[in-house]
Length: 131
Image 1 (cartoon, rainbow, N blue to C red):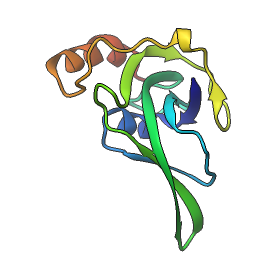
Image 2 (cartoon, rainbow, N blue to C red):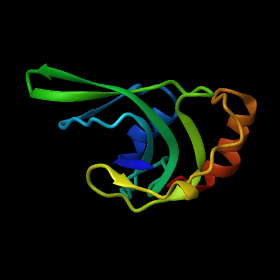
Image 3 (cartoon, rainbow, N blue to C red):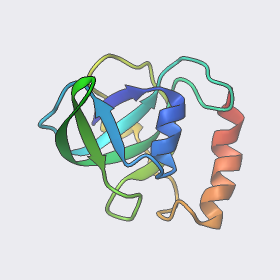
């Protein structure tokens, strides 16, 4: 699977569905599942050095503002056929898109991220990994 390293606080926003676009200075023709890997930088309250979700990239839109051109990578919602959470996977990030063996990626045991089972899973599985 293609993977991308992102600061853990931004990755958490993607994971919780509040960040629906990832901004980059470069475009990609890639569409589909993208493993979101938290960088190793330690930010209090977040999980450094792990992948926690797969964001489905559905489009890339070129934009421009006062700072120049950038690209908005659009992320599908967290639903049965969209983006999804995974069991925490320790990952050493890289620059740009990189590959991670699909066999290492295991879906979390639910599809609705706002469910009671998702909240319990977060507390049991992800919370102990927070910095």
